[in-house]
Image (cartoon, rainbow, N blue to C red; front, side, top):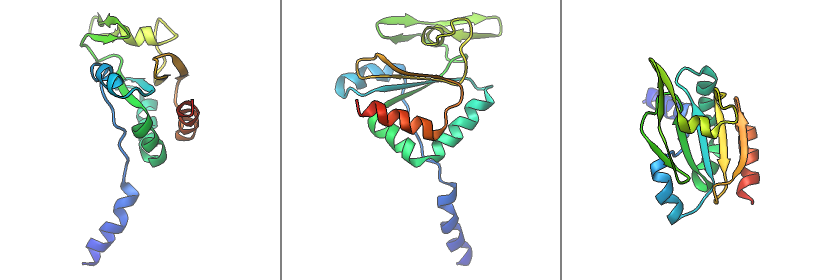
Length: 153
């Protein structure tokens, strides 16, 4: 019984909130039903900063709740996503380069057209106009502050 009580006491310490994420294909119909700002998070599997950032953001319950309630979120693996994506009236595909490659949409969204910097955060308003762009790691505090500013617009 003591072990069970100890377990229940420790569970909240290990709790990680989960950001609700969708896909670009979900986005169009979701925006028609309930327009909200959009967060696009570009990352790669090999990016260690991306992994640290994801863990830190998921630990911050306030930021996760803010994202889940007021934004649509799309996590976009820029170098492994191979399906065609329709976004903002255009079709984007995967560009193979031997054993690797990159999605055209990652290049279109990035200010660095040769090689995006990961992680990359893009926030669009309800009209899909750019309101925030951040290359590199973002802290939960910075993310929360920026998203509160954007959700107040």
